[in-house]
Image 1: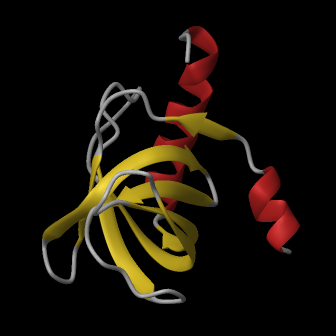
Image 2: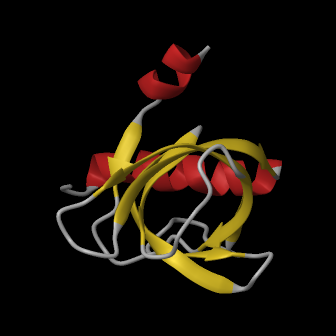
Length: 116
């Protein structure tokens, strides 16, 4: 099953996109890449490995963007970056509204018409 998540089409995030922990309403980092099933986050806040999170982010430049995307996510792994205070973190999405999933799909599809 994990193999399916890793094979999902991913798109690098070119512009800064902050990710907010909705339980604390604090920014925990920035998106690095994104797929339908998860994301790579450059975390700037300490996170709990194997923890469950409610996260929110906005995809600027998304076709048909109408609202922020909120997801329930499971933190699968963490690894320190070369920059002090930052951590690479891999999340798997657990829950997302169908309308937000469609918005994410539209954003992923728009990569075909733009250089990455």
